[in-house]
Image (cartoon, rainbow, N blue to C red; front, side):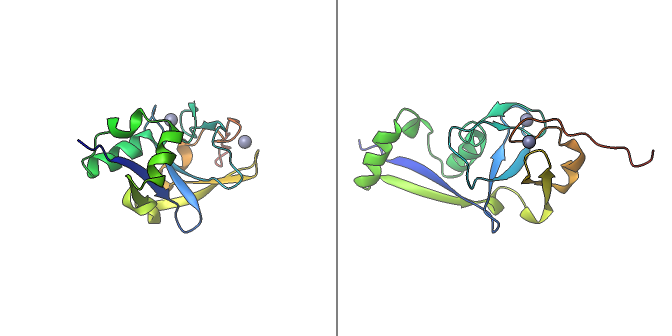
Length: 147
Ligand SMILES: [Zn+2]
Ligand SMILES: [Zn+2]
């Protein structure tokens, strides 16, 4: 039996932001990955858990795989070199998805981390839930405007 491997290729939104889901608190946030190395740490802006591009996209990839009724095991045990070989022999089916298939991007707003001079996008309803900078894990402080 021929096992066909599946690859998932996430497409960013129109501003170049990719979608991530924390595997700890399950909140979603979008990051601009330009200038970002794959091994760089990412911190969840909501709970502060550290992870990376892989750990923060596992849940999303699972959903996409399920949507395509594909067993994760097909690719889980392959090394990236094996996957590259498969691509060369055209045995990998590449599934592309964009941010709008996961969330309604119209509900997402820019959020600035002053410490790192970087932006993320979050659901406008979770604006006050941001506690940590995704890049340096610096704590975000909110000044109470009533005082
Ligand atoms: Zn989290
Ligand atoms: Zn920072």
